[in-house]
Amino acid sequence: MIRSVSAALLALSLSACATTSAMAEKAADHPEARSYAVSADAMADVDAALARASTSRKPVLLVMGANWCHDSRALAGWLEQPRFAALVAQRYELVFVNVGMPQTGDGHNLAIARRFGLEELPGTPNVLVVHPDGALLNPETATSWRNAASRSEDAIFEELALLATTEIARD
Image: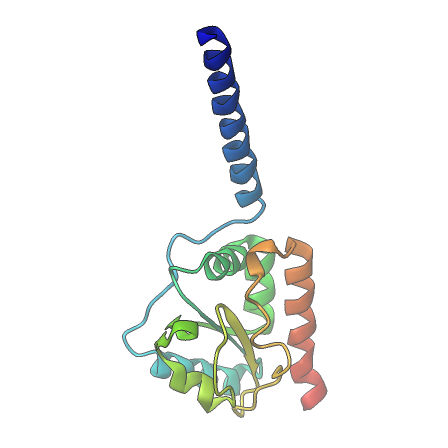
């Protein structure tokens, strides 16, 4: 009887390791930034990005997320990869803004979202593409990034590449 119980416990332990290993493999499906940049003056960062955008004629890629958020860190991790970094450098002026936990009432820098016509942020991250004149170019998709960690690399890249062309259509 003791051997049967021991064998069952060993089997359970091994299956737990397999589950943990599978979860670790799933987590490795995307890079994850270690830290989501937090600025002392996020509005000034946005203003600076818009000033750069006026000169470069590229839209601002405004990523509003948080360090605690797995999806925010996943998206930030993708943006650090060479393929994404090249796209962003060529097509966007990038700025990260920490928004805390807006869905629980503990939000930060929410005036920035309101500045671009978003009255609330239902979660994190949010990806706003802003024309150099300050107009939000993607109001339909700006708050749809809460599943960034489960999106494929290609899906994220294709959406960012498509959003970059929105600015061209507007001018």
